[in-house]
Amino acid sequence: MNGAVAFLVGTLALWAGWLALARAALLGVQLLMAHDPENRPGRARGLWQSAAAGAALLALAQGLPIDPGRPVEPAPIRLPLAWVLMPFTAWLALTSAAMVVVRAIHAVSALSRREARQRLGAAGVWALVGAGSFWLFRRSGDEAVVFRGVLPLSYTGAFALALLFVASAALMVATARSHRLRGLGKGVATHAALVVGSVLFSVPFVWLLVTSFKESRDMVSADGIRWVPRVWVTVPYDDPIDPLFEVRLDDGRVVQANIADRLPNGRVILEVYRPFSQQGLRVERSMDEIRRIPKQCQVVTARHEGRRVKAFIAQNLMDGRQRLRILEPKELEGREFLAQPSDTEPYMVTGIRWQNYSDALQFLPPEANYGLTYLKNTLILVVMGLIGTLLSSALVAYGFARLRWPGKGPLFTLMLSTMMLPGAVTLLPSFLIFRSLGWIDTLYPMWVPAFFASAFNVFLLRQFFLNIPMELEDAAKIDGCSYLRTFWQVMLPQVKPALAVIAIWTFMGAWNNFMGPLIYVSSPENMPIAYAVQLFQSDRGGEPGLIMAFATMAMLPVLLVFFLAQKYFIEGVQLTGLGGR
Image (cartoon, rainbow, N blue to C red; front, side):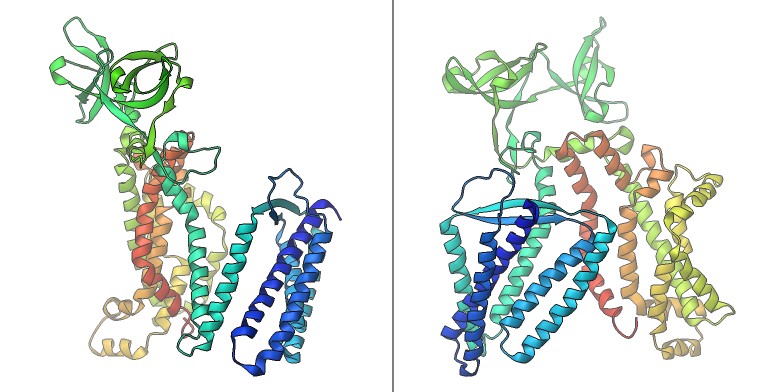
């Protein structure tokens, strides 16, 4: 047995042993507090069996060399952690082995013989599944890699966890004795598990938001992830050497610029500094057409004449040094000195850097109009896609569900068979068709096909239409309604939940569509948001704060639609499980 396998087996035995002892402790609390004499012998037997099983597993773990394979920090208690990277068949074999052990423990600690036989039968089934999965894993020739780690824990922490478990068990037993509080402990535990799971799954989203508000210096830290964002303090400064001006361009935009050259006629050449998308652009203006504004200079701390001072960066010199102007202490305020950037530390305070969002928009090309062009294109795709998908799919589904016409069954089967065609098969023919129509570098290829229905949507709506009582349609015919009026005023309102679910799916698909624009769009003025996010990531890959800010702005509408329409998701799922729908 090599070190990795011994570590994995020892880790499983150790944790299984502690779980068995935890079950013994729970049974012990029930023996002390519960008043049901008929169950006391069974609980006492289960207590001793669980304690014996836990002790045996812990003894097995102690006999194995649980070595993480690398130096770890010393700690009074070190709990091993292991993770295995392997294919599905190996995972199934490992899960089956774990279930065999669990069912065997349950059988040993069962309160009755009948329960013990059921647990042993379940263990036998899992053993067969595990043997078959292990045989498939060995035939495939794949390998499993064990990642080893250690969780350090102090004696105080271990005692606190044990005390918390005993207190929780006592609370569950106490509530179970009361008729009014029966089930409260289980409900609290269930909700606590749901809350913990929600917190764990929300960590990536929280990290996205936090990163979008952080400075570039706080993206990577030797101390781990910095969850509380900080901002680099700045102060306004009217630079007499290199002043900053505000100027209006010919297209009406107001930009910030520096003087690049002075002309003999009194006019000046200005070089745009911000927004970043137009940085380097030069314009000619007279002095009365521009307005002088202060710069926002970053504050740092440095040592000057043996003292720690707070100053702002007044100028970055060509030789790499910085000209600093002192802010504190007061007796040195206004004095300037030169320093290397390595000798200074940014003066940062806890706060949110909203500037990441404005900077992300300013880095977009001028054709994007600060992202409004991408938003407009995406809204066109979403709105037209929604209208086309809902109308065409509902009409076709109504025809297959309610109308009688020759060949309806074979054509419905043929339509469903198109779902088996991979998208890669129809990609080239679709491109050739749209190119012959002259629709390349337009939005038409991404929303016009929505008006030709979707096989899955048609199938879903057809099942809903089939479950609507025929009496409604017959009453509409008696009142003189045509097929279209019956469809629009009688049948369509009956399938609102299905239409809502299809609308949500269509909205999310159109909003996040990346492959379509990648194939058909080449100019910035026709790009949707999903494609713009990918291009922005490739262009500003070294600035995670800007990337996360742009990604957050791109996903906010989807999150808003999800939270506003989640009841339709739930209602649609419930209805699809009733009456064969």
